[in-house]
Length: 525
Image 1: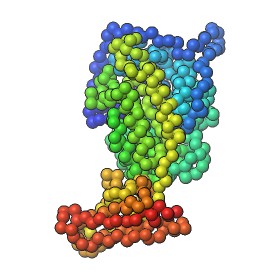
Image 2: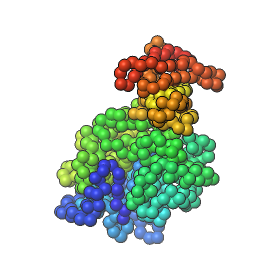
Image 3: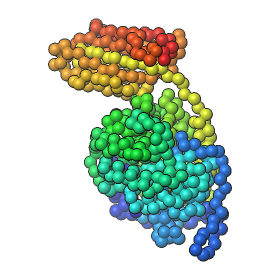
Image 4: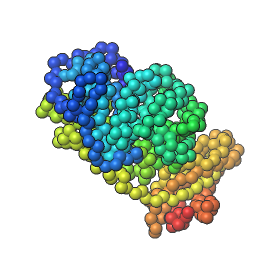
């Protein structure tokens, strides 16, 4: 049995290791009355016939996915308890979760349970599960066939969340994706898309793979830089099937640094949602923005630190995170939900028993046990009906002979999704705090009058006719800075404005503001 170890806070891993080494028994916990998961009628004999929940609800959307955990087992279907007994609890009455599922301590290989899960998801409009996968031959791997079969029945497709299992490497990631294609890629419910990305620009029907804990090869390895994955990613993209590989990290540098197709945050511990998806604006325009929203987070029974708790606020946390994810100015390539059934971390939207059934577990009150499924359907409908404001293409050519310079858009609009076109070999450049470009060089080079430059493409948003754009240049006391603003005219870049700052303002940051008419940007190609 794998022990889930998520990199959420600096002390979490050591706490989990201690907890697993010295488990605390659950004691005498009453067993909630769990209804039969599907009303299944089971016949004796060599074959089992089941009456699964009906296929109802909206057409599922492949633009909405939920992280799914097929790692649970019980004596009836698996000969032993699996994962429910985390942290030393004794199922079925005591489980390693602050909540208790309506379906009881189920088995992830029970077709009736999976059918109910997918029937619920079908009602919400979610079209994809991203299933936790811990390597070839793992328990989670052996659960894939039932997921695919029930997925075909309910119109739910299956993608994969490749976890940091012991021995995972970049080369192993390539092997894993080949294995998943070979073993499951022919099934109708295996998720594929013809949509493209920065590193997968073609329209081949590609699978989607989210890689958790991308900053380490596995849970026992030292951190790596994005470049560690480049060779494997290039080989994965070159496969006959291709692939979209999404890294579980929010630093946009990993898109170009590691050749990943997009980024996902998995879980951000915020009840308000304020600012938690600002990383979207730093993504290149052709990378996948794949935000993940949580309903809350609670893992006290498995000894997570109390500061990892995120109160559900009667459903407001879920609403806040959805709203924040959809209001960055960047259209999500796929919305993801964390999670359907990660019971240990208390992030699940699967129906949980009420405290009237067992007061020792948390519940969703005042929401019903199905309240998060209903909220999901509402938000899926909102997301799919949204339109995003048209952005304007712009190119910035920044040149400086100073040791440092920055260029910012202060008011009158916003800029997002920068793409570096070129930069001097000796220049240091960055996209700082999501809204400032920085260009630097060594002080001795600036003293010698060396000029460095960078060219960046951006998307300008929130522009309005008649409201000027205010840009600002700051720089060191040496030399000068030019910024050439360009727009597309008949498919070619044309200079709109040349902003020059050669003087000194008498302040430490040496700023100079420039006012620019937005209309030429709005009228450009």
